[in-house]
Image (cartoon, rainbow, N blue to C red; front, side, top):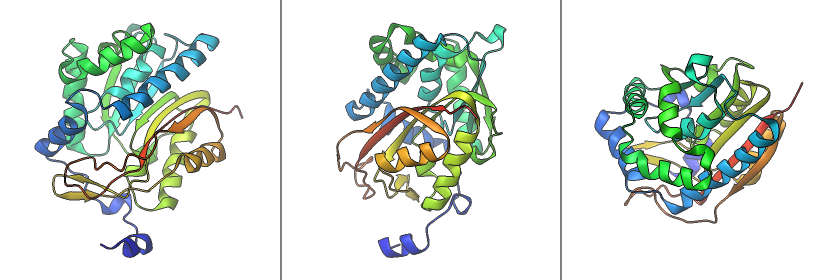
Length: 273
């Protein structure tokens, strides 16, 4: 499909086969997360932890939240680990609903979270080490995330309004559709899912026009930092931090022509009604 035809007939979420084979999913995770921590990506994680730590300290949030959602996890537990220090213990009602749209992704995510709960971090150990060095409150956050996880299959767009105290979403909304209008509606649903004062942590690909899973091209909306800021403010969010890396022009997988211009991260709070 040419660039012009993609713009005139953007691929939407419901037009995509979101089934991943276990081999495709594990290959994707290994290629993006399994060989250490990509410096560009980890800058975002460190910034997010710093922003969350300041807010949580000021508001006394550490260990107090009971309802959180990690959307579009796809076998990657980092979003849950970012939120875990804010959560109360499981026996005190704390839980993180970790979800994905595809059944195969849900099965892999469930296995990952069960392993983490047992202390088997595997490829996620370097990520835990980075988080621990960023802030002592995030020591053991991957295992804690596994213990708090309730893994479900669900659609981001069906998130109930005002149902969550915190939401994590890494590289998801802009990677579900090529239609900017649909992307805006997805972001609206995510923001509406937070109760007043609720915390949103999200990362996003800047300028992406798609990505490969095996030999399948997945859609994307080429968002910018300014655009994400406008979408968040329009949907009742007060932004603590929103920024991105410089253009890298790196393909995510060798030979993948669908490049991106950088990575962004936002930490924001749902405005009181």
